[in-house]
Structures are given as C-alpha cells and as structure tokens.
Image (cartoon, rainbow, N blue to C red):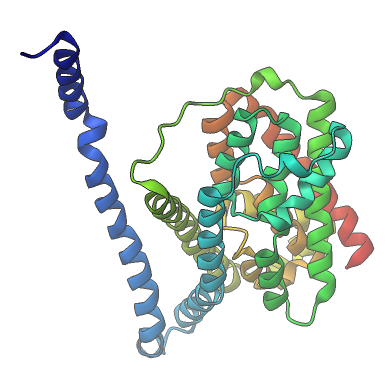
Length: 345
C-alpha cells in the first residue's frame, strides 16, 4: 500500500522529469560539441590548404598576404590556447575553492599582493578566472582579494609568459614588462577596491552544479572556455591581419608617432577583439609598427578588461559593479603599461 511519503516522492520524480532543464541537459551538451569539432576542423583545413589557397590568390597580393598573416597568427597561438584551456578546466574542477585562502596573510592589505602571486601557481584564462573569483567570494573571501586573483591569474601565469617569450623571441624585456605591468594592475586594483570599493554592489548568482561528476565538469569547463576563447582568437587574428594588410602604413605611422595615442589605440583594440591571454602575444607581436609600449598595453589591458570579460563580470557580479570596476581597470592597466614600458622597454 503506497504511503503518503511514497506518493510525494513519485510526484517529485514526475516534476523533475518534466523540468525542461533536465530534458535539455544532454542535448545541450551534444550540440555544444559540434562547434568545437567545426572550429578544430576549420583550423586544420586552413593549415593544410594554405599553399593552395595562397596560389589561388596569386594575382591578388593583398588577399594572399591577409590569408598568410591570419593563418600564421592562429597556428602559432592555438597550442598555447589549448594548453591554457585544459589547465584552466583542471584547476576549476580539481582545486578546492578555499585553496588560496590557506596561504593568505590575515591582513587584507598584505593578502592582496599574495593573492596576485597565486595567479602563477593557480593560473587560468579569463573565462575561468571570473567564475573562480565568484566561487572564492561565495566561500567568504573578501572581494578585493578575489578580484586581485581574477586579474592576475590570466595575465602572469607561466603559459602566458612562455607564449610571450615565443612571440617576442629574444626580447626578454617584453616578458618582464608584461609580468610587472600586469601584476601591478592586479594589485593596484585590489588595493583600490579594498579602500574605496563597495562590496554591496557585488551580487553573486546561484549556479546549478553540473551533473555527472568531475569528468563532466571538466568537459563542460573546457568546452565553454575553448569555444569562447577560440572564437575570439579567430576574430582577433582576422582583425590583426586586416590592420597589417589593408590599413595604409602612413596611417599607422601617424598613430604610432605619439606614444600615448598608440597606447590608447591598442588598448581599445585589446578591449574590442578580446583575445585570450594565452594567444594575445602573437597578435601584439604582429603590430610592431605601434612600438613596444603600445604592444605591452595591448597585452596588459586585454587580460584585465575586454568586452568579453566585461560581459562576464556583469553577469557574475552584477551590472552596477561592472560599470565601476571595468573603466577603472582599463585606466589602471593603461597607466601601468605606460609606466613599466617607459622604464623597461
């Protein structure tokens, strides 16, 4: 004879089965795999067919040059992008949310730079750093400290520094400058929010956990980051190739003639194209006409605040927070790039 408890459990099971979120979960995962395959297949096809495609446009030097620059940037950056996405997913799944707090000083002022340095130990791309920072806040970490980690992790981690060294081969000063300017940006923003920030502006959403264990969480995190970062890498490569091929050199020389103007130009460029930090050094290196300090600004601003990050911060922490934190980060990142560039480069 069914009891009242059994009847309630049956009704709950039926409600769960009727929930659209439950019905659509597996299909969403299956659909999301297709873009990954198409993106990887497209990049591989472009690499294999590059000689043939270039020969087709043999009479159109500008088109052939654009295609060559576009594919070269993408192929150089792709291994670092994949490595960064995989490492970021591993950290998001396996590293406990309170791992950072165990090593932080008790005083918040001292904890901010230490949290910045943990970005080298627990690196992640921009897509992963935002939800990780939100998780740290939900576990009780002060927002200023979590935000410092958010800015430092995608900017000073070993993969980013190695990719910068490969892109700027023989230019160790650029690697050092990127580390110093990005670390300074993260720490200064942490201190600013610690002293002047309004924590009540941060509204953390409630997120449903991924069903299926750690493997499912890893696949979901890697898929999300690769689709977002890969798409913006393609966009950034295309824009950089267009700038190199179609924009008259005289225009670029005019912009590059003034350090401040060139820095602001590439800072805005970094905000718009939103290239993943593991790959942005290759695009920056292709824009050598703007000068080293402007190239540095591109690599410092992008991982700190771009249109993708701004949207993610607004969705994770609230729009009012993003409207304050984003512009201030943009200004601090430009200032840090100018200061470090003038001293190191």
